[in-house]
Amino acid sequence: MEIGRQKKEIRQEMRRRLSALPPEEKSREMREMERRLEGLACYFYARRVMFYVGVGFEINTLPVLVRALAAKKEVFVPYCLVAERRLLVSALYDLGELKAGYYGLLEPKSECLRPLDPALLEVVILPGLAFDLAGNRLGRGGGYYDRLLSEIGPQTVLLALAFDFQVYDRLPVESHDRPVHRIITPSRTINCRSLPPGWI
Image (cartoon, rainbow, N blue to C red; front, side):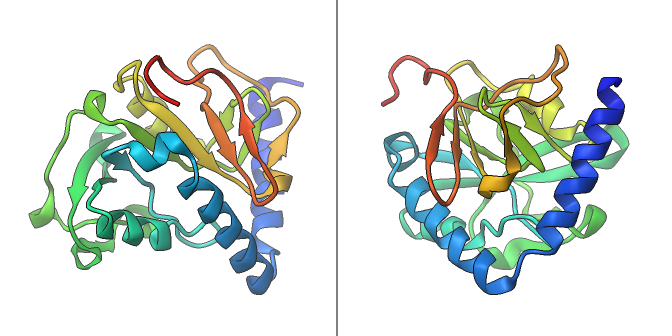
């Protein structure tokens, strides 16, 4: 089966399973993910962290994002440059700066944009519909995060939050795919590849 069709089928299956998760179970498992994420040394010591802002069936990152702001981390979120099909990395100071934008995603209001060179990010928390044990990621299919990852530096740590059923043994992979370093699920933290030098 060609890679494109395989990816489409996995995306459909994951959307179905994510949408069917009971709210109480989803909330309980997300709290466990947050606990594991905040216990990671690479996250704890990072100062410049980029979050996606989960909506709909995605994992809700707002609770841990709010605590990152309270901890005086420099928090960044994506802003969709639709015409260019890429993401702008923008500093976020307060949740009140967010509004519904492209595809209903929460992103900074245009008057609150504070761009940062993606190469300066220390940690990026990536969204995804599915991951595999090697850290490969399957997104929504727009390629926005693939383009962002081509701009980040070699020292940036890539993290992902996922429910256990979102982790496959192996996903179909293409040459441009960039694997994450760690996947945090409710039951475990998966070490997919070595952290960049200097991180613990």
